[in-house]
Amino acid sequence: MGPVLADINGFVTKKDKGFVILKKDHFLIRKKTVTKEQARRVNRATCEQCRMCTDMCPRYLLGHDMQPHKMMRIMNYSIDDMDAVKIAQLCCQCNMCELFACPAGLHPKMANLYFKDMLAEQKIKYKPEKTEFKARSMREYRLVPSKRLIVRLGLRDFDLPAPMTDVTFAPDMIRVSTRQHVGAPAQPMVSTGQQVTAGQMIGCIPEGSLGACIHSSIDGTVSDVTPDYIEIRRS
Image 1 (cartoon, rainbow, N blue to C red):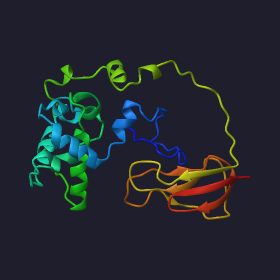
Image 2 (image 1 turned 180 degrees about the vertical axis):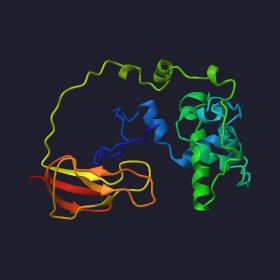
Image 3 (image 1 turned 90 degrees about the vertical axis):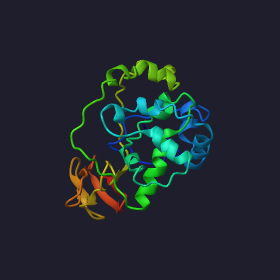
Image 4 (image 1 turned 135 degrees about the vertical axis):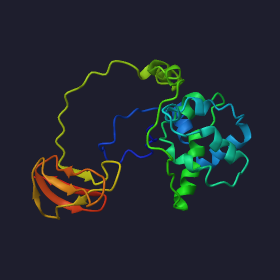
């Protein structure tokens, strides 16, 4: 599900689970760097409506109305029906349709994103007609073995023992991102020049919003506060 990191200058946040370093010509890099316009042209020229993207979609199999093949059809035939594309907002961008299900190697997820962006621009939101969902009967037969998925993704050579290494980091300066999570960024609770200790809360959740508080990982002095990060220099 992760994106391609084009620049190594950034932050490690709570959302980061791990990093895989691949060559630029690797299958995953080539797939994940396709632009929406490139994907739209390929989808329109090649999709045969086999509906494998829908049949293996985890959201669809859990009982939701996510149907990527319909988004491909609407895109291919330029159908002007905003009500029909609302279900694109159900896409969780897991990439199962693009990286495993589609026999032609097309971009159903990108079709979903194309319509999600369109809906967001028009401030249109999907409203489900029900609140309880039942998994479809075929779900148990369409689960993908992790080993098989790893091979299909071209990551078999990386599927090796990876023992933890005890490494101590003692940077002179840290920057704690205010966007550590899905939701609103944390609001800084400290100011430049203020002394903080390891574990001290330095950013809080905005009132009435979903998010997560942030804390300092070192004892030090706050040297910079911006909407994106809080910089602390070790004492």
